Image 1 (tube, rainbow, N blue to C red):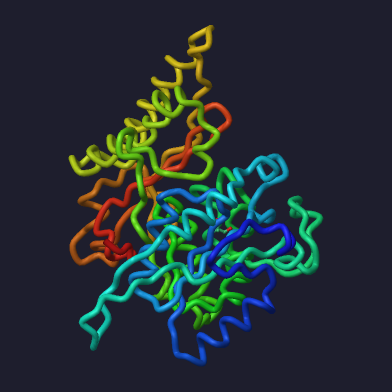
Image 2 (cartoon, protein in one colour; image 1 turned 120 degrees about the vertical axis):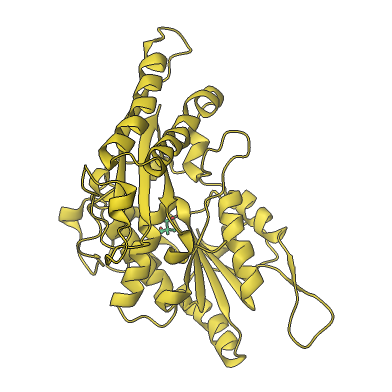
Length: 353
Ligand code: PAF
């Protein structure tokens, strides 16, 4: 979008890296910290929770909106991905947070400081094809960590994310950054990437993970793609994913093997799928389980089938106290939903409370 066609907004919007960098240079000179939230737009309360964390802990807060072609496979929903720019800018403009600052009795009111809204050619100067075999230019791959969980169903997704977030970090140069727990594999992989690439803006310990925000009535994890759900899909089918993960969690806590925990969680989704798929009228909903799995938070390896919580957490073992990811994905109509629960101490993953 050219700057001439941007909706009116009191927050400065930068569409080029060069113009943003001028602004960023002033923040460096003034020794101001910059918090950063990367998004693909269609903002919801989950994104706004990330922005609030950033406002609380940084002098300035920048949010990017960029729908990244490289993380969509050719058959996926790039063309129809929800886009609500005027509403996004309104929500951001309405945000403010009062913070206490050292040495002053008066609270300070912070608001979002800048929006980075680059075009595809700005982010991909060599061009970008969604077909990996046609891609040319530079890509970032976190080897060994992109083929499990989400990566198993979406083999090019995490490479696309690592690539665009490297570019965003290089452009934005954040002091701290905030990602949602809903995309736990993405967040942990990006932290590994910042470490492997020796990044300083942000450094790996400044990449924070913020708990998933859920719809209070249904516990469905908020996601921009939830906009695709019909009211009936949202009410009847979508909540089953979180309910299934809760069943898996209880079974794990009660001492069941990993295989049994996953089996119980999958059974709930498949039962619901069978019921809803069976209608031959407008009540029919196509529900399909993609996966439920339990993975090591360090290696992302799938846990062995027969292992139980006590064996995983064996006292004195190098795994002792290491949390496990219980995650899943399912299709409800044309919407792919994902969710996860961390089994164990979330603070060990730097998930802020
Ligand atoms: O989580 C998202 O919205 C995207 O994957 C991200 C991190 C903005 C990269 O495009």
